[in-house]
Image (cartoon, rainbow, N blue to C red; front, side, top):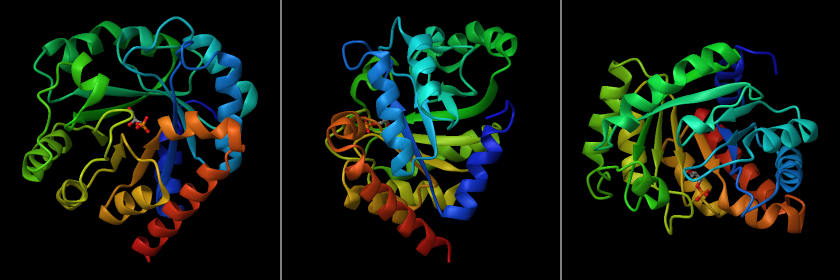
Length: 258
Ligand code: 1GP
């Protein structure tokens, strides 16, 4: 995909298909070498995902190689999802230029962003300003980014952060419960946030089943992110489980939009 068009592409998919499905691949050799990341991306593409996100809170070392293999396997846009400045690569199409708004540490709110900004400019990456809100239990990212985790039973706090994010000019809000979370962001929280803001809402962490995906979409997510489930199943079943989840999520999205 040519540079500068990824966000518009995501908005177009959202309006035409009801929701956007994003596949997250961790460039982590302990999980999968680049070759395997490419195969996973291919299966995800065939299953109907709309873009590939690459990143993670503990990613190291093989970011470029991983993106190379993904690009060989699919022409879907590759969007960086950096846990730190080391998560920037010139091989991607775009970057979720994210700020952990509920971190206790200003490094994760503005400093890492200042350290990485010129690399984004130099590489010609399309920056998509994202407010990243980490919800309980938060998982690895909650720990690493020193988040003051948003309480699951206080949706109004999440909504207040999300509205503040919109007023600060962020283009998207991401509600994250942490990769591999035992349960996704609560439906009530997704619903309150989506009714409060006018910018797209991304939800990720702990979305595994068709039912999970449908719940999250019915509650109001515009884009859903799946990582763990895809890494665990896509190679084994050639993306069949994922295909069912995406189909169910898109159906729920279309129904909501009609
Ligand atoms: C993590 O929200 C993403 O940042 C994806 O979470 O691995 O639980 O799908 P899962």
